[in-house]
Length: 391
Image 1: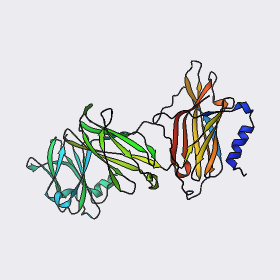
Image 2 (image 1 turned 90 degrees about the horizontal axis):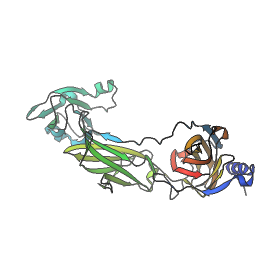
Image 3 (image 1 turned 30 degrees about the vertical axis):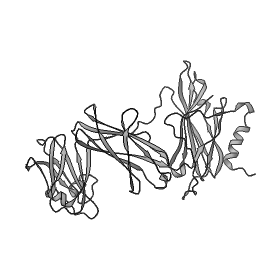
Image 4 (image 1 turned 90 degrees about the vertical axis):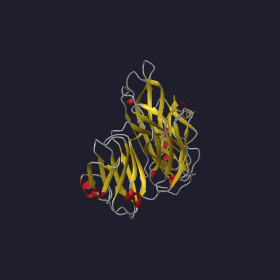
C-alpha cells in the first residue's frame, strides 16, 4: 500500500518516540459557538497553483498577555433606505426624520435618469426647506466619496428638526434608492450575527435591538437574505426566548457554491422611525472535518490531529498550547500551525509545539485551545474547537 508524504511524516514522528510517549484521547466536546461539520461534500480539486509541500511551524507566546477572541461585529444604524419610482419622486416622496441635520442621498437604478443637486428640493409644513449643503456626483467623487454617476446628496439645515418632509426631484425618471442618514439621531438599531462564517446548510442567528439613547425601545422588523448573486429570500423575524428580536437564517445546503458574502438586510421601525441595518457572513462548503481521537505527547508537546477530507485540497490545522502556572492558572505559551495537501480520505497533521516556548514556572497539565481546521485552497474555515485536549 502506498503512503503519501504527509502520512509518512506522521508515522516518522510516532516512530521516533517511545510507544508510551503518545496517548490517544477523544477531542473535548464542542462548546457553544464552536463550528463542527455534521456532513461532508465532495468537490473537485480547486483550479490554480497551490503549494503541495507540507509545512509545520510554531512560535512562542507571552503568557502574561491574555488571548481574547475577535470582537464580534455589530452593525449600528441611524439610517434607512427606500426604493421609489421617478414619478413619485417628481411629485414628492415622504421622508420622516427624528433629529436635525439629516443627510439624504438619491441614487439612480439601472437606466434611471441622473439627478443633479439643483433639481432636488425638500418641503415641510407647506414651504421650501433650506438646504445646508447640496452636491452632485462629480463633486462627491472629487471629494473622495464612492458614489455612482447621477447621484445627488442634500443635507437639511439645522433649523429643520424632527418631522415629516417631502423630497422631490425634477426630471426624475426610472427607479431610485433614497437613503436617509441621521448622524445626530438618538434612535439607532443594532444587529449582530452569532458568527461571522458558517457552513452550507447551517443556521445563523441575527439578533437586533432598537435604542433611544441608551434605553431599549420596542421595534418591529422584517428581514431579507441576499445571496452573492443578488437573489433573495424573506426571513422571519420573531422574539427569541430572551425576548429579543431575532432572525434565524437557514442557509441553503449549496450556499457555498456562490462566491462572495451572504448578507442579511433588516428593516425595522422603532418609535415610528425607520431604521435599516445589514450584516454579512461568509459561507463555506464542509470539505473536511476533524475525526477520531487526538494523539498527544506531554513529553514532546506534540499532537497528532486526524482529519477526514471528502474533497482534494490543502488543509491546515492550528492550535494554541496553554500551560499551567505555579498558581494553577492556565496561560498561552505557544502556537503551532501545520498544513499539507490531501486527497479524499483520512489523514493526520502534527502540531509540534517547541518545548523552549514553555517559560520557567509553567508546565503540565497542558491544554490545546482554539483548534482550527481550515481549507486553505478554498479560503474556508471548516471547524473550530475552543478547547480540544487536556494532557
